[in-house]
Figure 1 (tube, protein in one colour):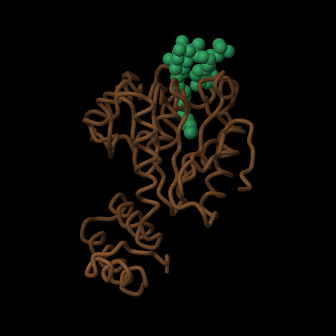
Figure 2 (cartoon, rainbow, N blue to C red):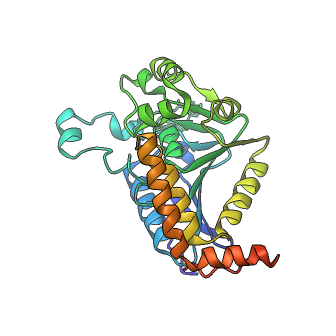
Length: 263
Ligand code: CO8
């Protein structure tokens, strides 16, 4: 297929319906410099637009998912430059346009902006010894790409406050126990196999239903419960207008495999 080539990331389609984006700046442990973020943004938009992609995986290397924003790039930045260029604004919303599900597969360091990037995914799979954290406080700054909000929603205020004020990191095992990660694996190989398998499974379902499911779960993060439940019911009702609902339920009754039309 016509996959574009990049300098700081790699894009592949390792399984049917699955696009994998691999952060690839090994010399800097995948530190998120501006050109990398720009490439990632392009790749995510292309995957969203691609008719052959139904689910996405975002990963780094065995040693590092991403060790944060590029400290060397940020070091000389002034307040007025950051303020007037809205530094990082476009990064903290990297996945907000994405309607297709995105799984982050985290091995090694996921620090600062790297942790925040993983938290932007729909869910995280990781290795037991992955190294998550928001160490910005040690650099004289604070999380800038949603970490104080998304980590707090994931682990609760007490733990998030402790983690962000001390800058101490937490393991993949803890991430799973605290609800930051959906699943934990012993090795990098098992992580990648498990992630691709899940992505392939999701990609095998009706695209219409998958998009609806992602949309309603995400609404739970923004809406009060009553409004969220009502929103869910509206989307649920609307899916009776899809062909795939008819196909799925008919296939169940006939004990056959559903052949989705994605309509
Ligand atoms: N920025 C720039 N370069 C980095 C970064 C980084 N964040 N992390 C690592 N590197 C570079 C190192 O400078 C080193 O380069 P060189 O060989 O030229 O000296 C190379 O990567 C390898 O790193 P180490 O030699 O330090 O490797 P170790 O295995 O000894 O240590 C660590 C690994 C513990 C991960 C260590 O590199 C480290 O502490 N890195 C910084 C972690 C950090 O503080 N991250 C937070 C950055 S602030 C931030 O992310 C703000 C968020 C803003 C929003 C972002 C939006 C997505």
